[in-house]
Structures are given as C-alpha cells and as structure tokens.
Length: 369
Image 1: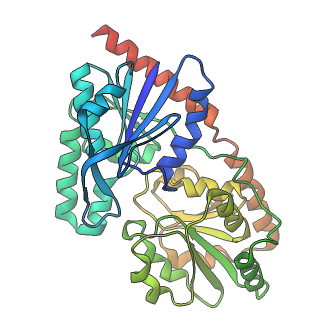
Image 2: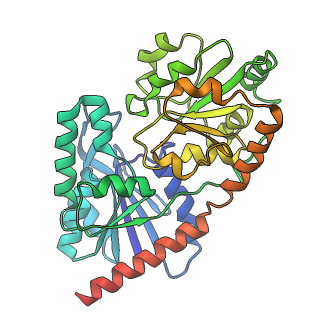
Image 3: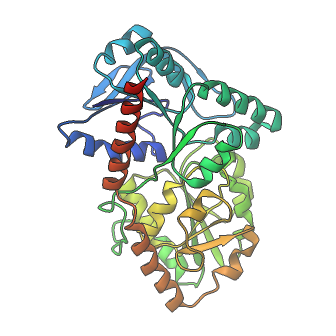
C-alpha cells in the first residue's frame, strides 16, 4: 500500500505536523508492505528518501501568515502518483487543491489530515469576517471527502459544528523519547546556566516554546510577568519585534533543535501554553516527557493531555498562574514523575498502527463502490 501525503509545510520547519511526519515515516520505511511519500513544494526541487520537494511554478505569500502558498507543475506531480493507493491531504492549501484534482482524475481515495484550525487563526489575526470566509472555503474544500483525521476530540468537536456528514478519526501524536527526556547536565549551555542562576534567586522559570505569532495568544502571558517569575521564550516568528516592549523583562532565545529544546524544557519549572486554537500541541507532550508540568487553558486540546494538579494546571485565565504554582518542592517533584509516566502513553507504534487500520478501511470502502 502506497500513501502519498501532500503538505504545504517546509521540511526545514520545526512545527507539530513536521514532527508527526518525522515520527511516523520510519515505520513505513521498516515495513515491506507499506510505502510513504511526503510531497511539498518550495523554491527548488529536492528528493531525499520519502521526502519530495517539487519546484514551485509560482507562489504567493499569505497576508497575515508566515508562509507561502506554492503551486507545482501538475504533470510533474502526476508522474509521482503512478502507484499511489491513497492520497492524504495535510490541510486545504494549494498542495491540497492539486492533490484533490489528481485524486479525482486518477480515482484514488482521499483522506484529509486536519492539523490546523486555520479559521480560528484567521479570526484572531484578521477578524470575524475573514474567519467566516475561511470556514466557507473549508466547507467547499472538504465537500465530497468523508474521512478526516484529527489529532484530538476537541478538534473533531469544533469541525463537526460546521462540517456535517463526515467521519472523524482521532489519531493523536507522539514524540521521540530518545530526544525528549529529562536532562540533568547543562554544562555546555551558557544561556541555560544563566537561567539556573536565576532559579537560585527563587524565581520560577516559566517557559514558552514554539512559533511566536498572534494566534498563539502570546500577549496573555503578560499576566505571568512578575518579580517571582522569569518568562523565557524559545522560538521564532515575525511577531517577536512587536511584543518585545510588552515583555521587557523576558528572555528571548532563537529557535532550537529538538535535542537542545529538551534541555530548555528540563530546566524550566513550568511550561506555559497560552494557545486556544491549537488542535493538539506537540510542545505539551515534549514538555511533560522532560518532566516539566504544563499550564494551559481549560476547554482546549491541551485538556486531553494534561491532568489538572498532576501533570500541570488547567486554568481559565493566566492571572491565576501565581496562585497555582505556589506549591512545595515535594509536590513539584511528584508532578515531574507524573509527567514522565503520562508521556509514555504516546507511542509512534500505536499511531502507525492506527493509520494502517484506517487506510485499509478506506481501501475496502473504495472497492465496494
């Protein structure tokens, strides 16, 4: 069985969907029966094992967002699909449009992997009217597609409110526990050693890691800035220059490799996850795997990972943080143990198995038609 995944995402990024690709790919490579091809589009052609980057014919940068919509050569894509059994579309962008067209032309079954609530993002960044336009576009794009993979029940519930007669398949994420585990030796990290010095003054280290952009609800973290806390941002994004005046006492660290990021998780007292729009939040899993409890909003996807009071705190508003984190060292150490234990439940083996079961069902249903 050959699966072709079409994505807008660059292979050079460190976002959640690329972590998903990296996690699941080795299991396809180790299987003699199943093959995976991940196809995207960028400024130059490149092929590395399962990853194929097509050279774009033309592209356009989205207003408000930090990425391009790229169009490849249709004939070039068509050549790649000669033995493809299922097309998986990773989002309703231009690569998704190309994939939908070729799936229809070749009569290949399609499944959508919905990993980003772009309608919510649009609402935060550009307002309610733009959000409605994006919702309408998603409805049109998903018309005729029955099967949709989502990473959380929260995401399925949100989509189900305006996408009817769809079959939602919840397949969660996982992390590489060989990379994300509790680190103890920070000798080679000068910046982290400076953080440790801050901890000795009894300030608590609150860490945010990820894309620094408006839809992440970054400004709500102003409420945790105080003499008792040191807020550290690890990540990149065009929004940084706009928020630095709001976070004058905060520390900003450039985007890190996954291995280096695990050290930042490990040195922090708590990880703060302000987003209300993320469909899952890989960083939440990464943090608890490193033994660092997470503070996140109630009624979000993070609620499906975090156990309130055991692996973190679920709050209504970030002005509650100081009260929540005022706990003893013994309580904090217990949370570290709980976090690591909870993170072990998320394995790539199970996710791969869930995908294969779903693909076989789709193939079976296709043969019945």
